[in-house]
Length: 144
Image (cartoon, rainbow, N blue to C red; front, side):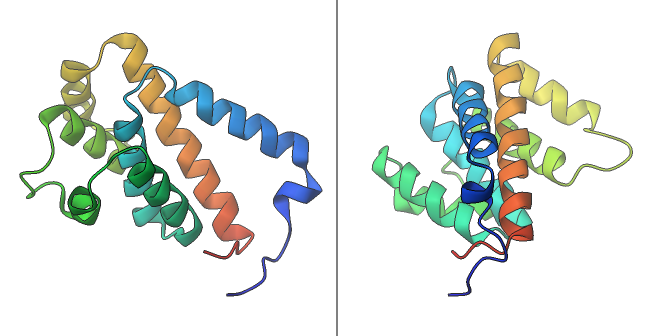
């Protein structure tokens, strides 16, 4: 295990706490397992071992099945996910791999079919928050 380059929590505990508060507020009305699935998928794409470890543990504690967690990277071909989960995972991928073109209309429309305006907004913020955590964790070289 490598030591982090910088202790981002210790050096700026107020920012760390605010980010944790944002993350909790963002995911508030979402199904907890759905929130963990999108956090895990974004963390897989970004290669953040620390966040993968944390959110896999949280998902298991919340009752997620190991079989589904192992299939998150292959959600498109796995029969283990609902249409709503697929829409959320696709949105997470599009936001995590965002380009100058933004999130494709069809991806956003698919998410809108499964989530009301409030839940969709919270889903967007949950995905944005995990991407921020991933980027800070990777930049600081936080150990997994």
